[in-house]
Image 1 (tube, rainbow, N blue to C red):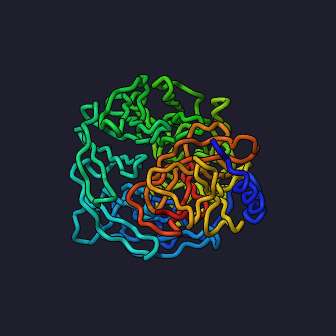
Image 2: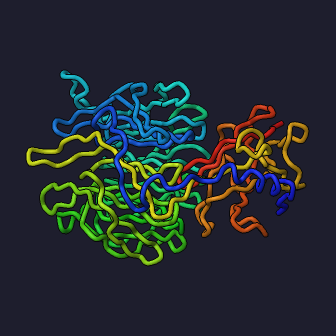
Image 3: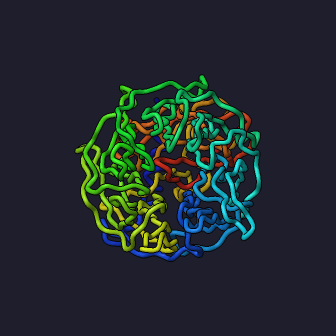
Length: 490
């Protein structure tokens, strides 16, 4: 692989201007930030490429009432502001950021939207456009999965949906290029309940679910599901987090055997396709969040800790994959369950909303707070010829080492190379590269040969791009986004 000495020089010149900021808060602590405009739980939170967070839907539990409202959190100001409403009220829906920068909202429970509404499960889907701040309908789902689905963005930019609240197993795929859903292969399980869908580094999707106490894998190129070994550890309502090792952590949840919350945790190892036990959490919990941090640890926050009755908590803990152990971390300012926890571009975690269990039932929460990890690692950086991190990127033709320019543009299918920082040293979980709003195939990612601290990413130019001197290029890693640069395409 040719690194391009000219490109490296440009990178070194521009790195200082893009250096990360200092700690805003004391490391390892939670601090309050602005409140949401509307109290809500069971909502979605989606990090947008510009660093803002879209909060959509959710609502109350008692009585069950879904919200159509949405809002945006701006980390630069710490303030939430209202944005356009969804076309319908939804709670417990899915929200998936597409390669084109729009957010796909699908499914959910629409109960109690008006005094006369009976609610019901949505088969509708819609798209949020951050450039206009509006939602617009897209194609309807074709498989009724109750109101609950598990969704995973596939490497080619499509989205897999697997029904998660139905007595029959079903799956479907959304194609952004057509704005429509199509049936996928039928999962192995006869029925699916309370499942999760996690994209693995090899491009397959892990479906782990409780109804039949099993796991299965979806392979996009062949459109097939096949079983993988799952030990008899019943769990529901537990989150899943992809680790930097490529494994998947599933901490806690509800144990059907004990009829109570669980502190047990399971790790799926894709290299041998087996689930294994890891250390227990410090407390039993369900309806909590599990957020992968850039240093490889996982923040577990809030939830229902019971036992037997609903009790929300402000307890948090950190999972260390190297040790296979959980340790107590700082407490949140408030108790929460069915909230959201979103890793921001600056390395902090935004925890927002949720429910607080009171003696008379759950109370919806509008507060939000920020967790500052002990190791604050910002998002990846792409380098530009100007050294400012904007404009024409420091991207070169892999075959020649020559910089891509208007006079020497890239062509469809060609391999290009670029440098970045703040990827994983393990080199297991791949970054995603988007060119002109389309997913690019990543050919190589890892330490840049001979240049400590830098990472090289090789990728192919997608087909079907319009010719021009300034096609946008964006890189994301563990859900966070680089600055945007451009590349000339013919």
